[in-house]
Image (cartoon, rainbow, N blue to C red):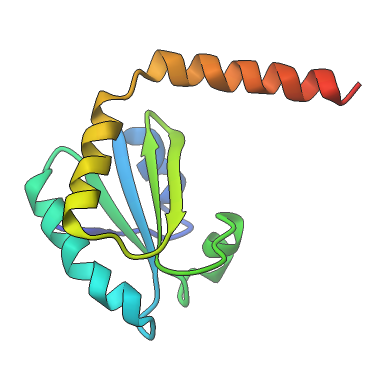
Length: 127
C-alpha cells in the first residue's frame, strides 16, 4: 500500500475510520523530510493494514496549525482514533518498525483508562 495524501477535508475521517493511522507532516523544501520519505513509503509497503498518510504543511497550513506542528518532519500515530504518538524528527527504518509494533501491541483499554484518569485529575485541579 502506498501513502495517502491527507487534507483538511479527509484527515478526521481517515483517523476515525481506520484502526492505525501514521501521519507524516512534511514539506518539499525540508531536507530531513525528504530523507524520511522513502523510509515512510517502505513501511507503508510492509504494513498494508495500516494507513500511512502524508500532510504537506505548505498546502495544508490550517491542518498543520490545528495539529500544532512546530517542526517538520513530525510523525503522529493514531490508534482507534486516539493520538498515541507525536514526535518531530526523521526516524530510521528500524525505529519506525519498532514504533509500529508497539502501537499494534498497545493495550487500548489501558490507554483509554489512563486518559480518563488524566481527565479526572485535570478537572479536579481546575476547581
